[in-house]
Length: 212
Ligand code: DX5
Ligand code: ZN
Image 1 (cartoon, protein in one colour):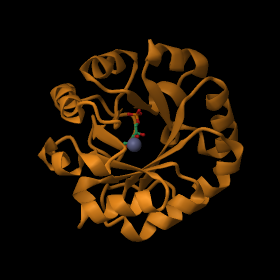
Image 2 (tube, rainbow, N blue to C red):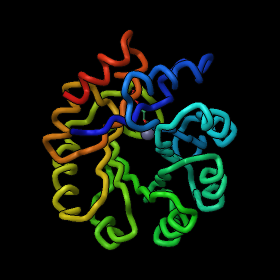
Image 3 (tube, helix red, strand yellow):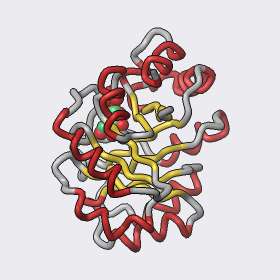
Image 4 (cartoon, rainbow, N blue to C red):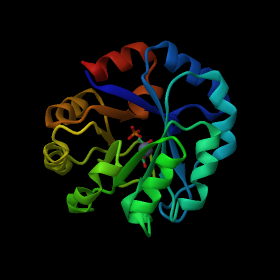
């Protein structure tokens, strides 16, 4: 069964702690933390102080998605703040092998994300350096966008590329119970969901619907 990583971006920021406790109690697997710098994506979200302050209230693995240009310098900050998985964008790194190695040296799982337009060929030489591949199924930057069905073939292709390796295949953007099924059928095993969880009235039902 797929894991759900709830994207905090869609939560009520006026009561983050309550939101996180509710979603965890409802059976959420991971918490997805979308960090945006206003350069790599045309939006700003939150950063290290927020992650640090929510870390003590949750046991969920923190799945940090860095949508920032040149993330290298910031990696130790996000590691210290309590991230368990740190995902960077292939398009944002100058020396991606060095960046991924740095994440593992910090004792964290290393993830690599691709925008919808980025071909998967760049992943092949990096497979041994990766714990997670994050395929964007919308253009990164905003929650609440529609799923791009033309990404399904890419999900199958990456699943085939991963083969027997122990690498999570995560999808992010426009995931709801219908698109979740399509992604899982194509080979995804971690579903990021913002709106489909935090905009629902009942988080347990929302999570169950995604996992079904
Ligand atoms: C978009 C973010 C997503 C976003 C998903 O750039 O990476 O994680 O929060 O939101 P929904 O599930 O609403 O599409
Ligand atoms: Zn994300």
